[in-house]
Image (cartoon, rainbow, N blue to C red; front, side):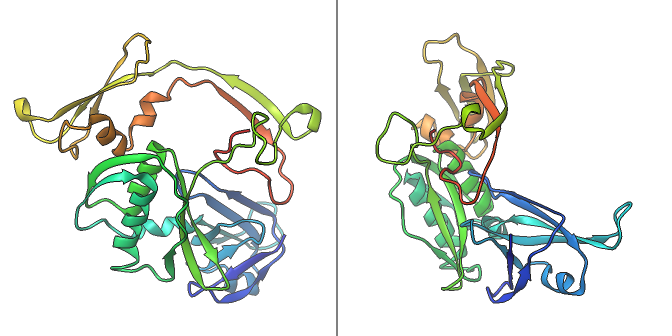
Length: 299
């Protein structure tokens, strides 16, 4: 595998094609992360500098180097350089939302507005641009200020649910912000290629099933703005016929009790209590080349 290294100005600096270890973890609701271990040659030291970009041709996202460490591992034959960082969407952590935004509408449009208003139109992040809108329909309502753009995008994504990324567009020298959803690859549809994981196809191992009710809640009592008898209180009922299990949520930025479920969902905390006892199936998947599936796809 060849790793193409670019400067912060998206100018090609060189290629790293030999390494002892390389971890690349993309995520749906937040920036993924990577860690590269290779020989600390003069060439690698020059390429793997802070803020430089690591780009893989088989992935849409690229990573920004945030830390560099050079040491001599036990039993090793020479110095090793360890370059680590997060995917491009981590740059959204560098901008604060100001002034306040009061928004009701589609979560994708909210993400795009927050990014555009705070990291493109004003106080622009270098080379950042909006990609084409996907037309995703999950809705939200919220008011926010003084939080990072990344924090709010993560909260909106988890509540919707929607993923987001900032992919590298090398030909146009751009970082492109996009929101995206999962794709249906299950056997119940006939539009997209079907994806199956099983022992028969030798593409999954270590399968396990887990169900845990510990800490599960389905009825949230949310304390918003104010204090004492004047404090705004909202309630979100997601019992769905189940026995009621209450949870207290301290959300000081909740401004009114109207549209309580939308307000609470916009705060980004709803998924934690609504899904905390969902059964999970876990296994290790064998990936070869560019995968036909992605995070949050239905399979």
